[in-house]
Amino acid sequence: MKRGERALTLCMPITCKRRDEESDEEHTFTSFVYKARWFVLAQTDGQELDPITIPEWDAERAMKALGIERVPFDHTDGNVQGFSRGRHIAINPLAQLPFKTLFHELAHSILHSDEGDFADDETTPRSLREVEAESVALLCCESLGLEGADYARGYIQHWLSRGSGSNAETIPEKSAQKIFRAADQIIRAGRLELAPATA
Ligand SMILES: [Zn+2]
Image (cartoon, rainbow, N blue to C red; front, side, top):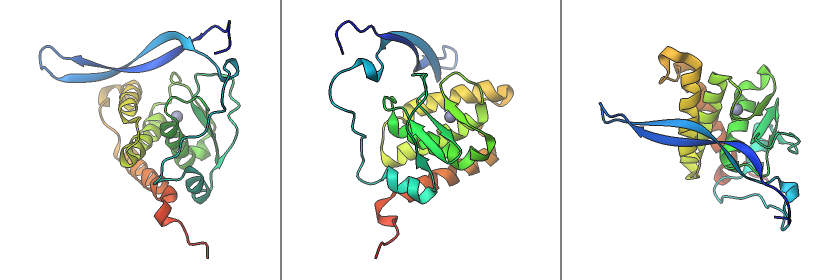
């Protein structure tokens, strides 16, 4: 940190577990806490952040195959992890879980790009689209062995319970089909061995 810079207070979602005393079942829920421990990138010194790479899945290859383009992150709200605008997506260089966010935004782009723009903070209610995008991210993280699945589960439950009330635990069948199709598309598009031959 540069000397004299003060941490910003930001809202941060955390996943909590609670044991039901009567049934002894464990419930997970998402809670939001305010922490004064964040700095924005401009307040820090040091090396540029390099994007993290994983060997078996290539983000640039995937985006090219899907016809989705990465644009610079120009959102002024540091709480926003990423956004998608039609076939363009952007990821906050300080996203907590950059791959999870990337999958989430790719999912919005694939599934919802004809429904308008998205800016992803953790507080705007648009429940089912969020459930779909985050479920895609969950499947992608799990199939590539990346962190983020636990966070995604909490986030999905949070939106499910806000969105549908009575049917809070269920992802509608139509959404489930969209989720599996999009996750499959994203994984395939970035897999090295499935890349088209460039002879
Ligand atoms: Zn979203």
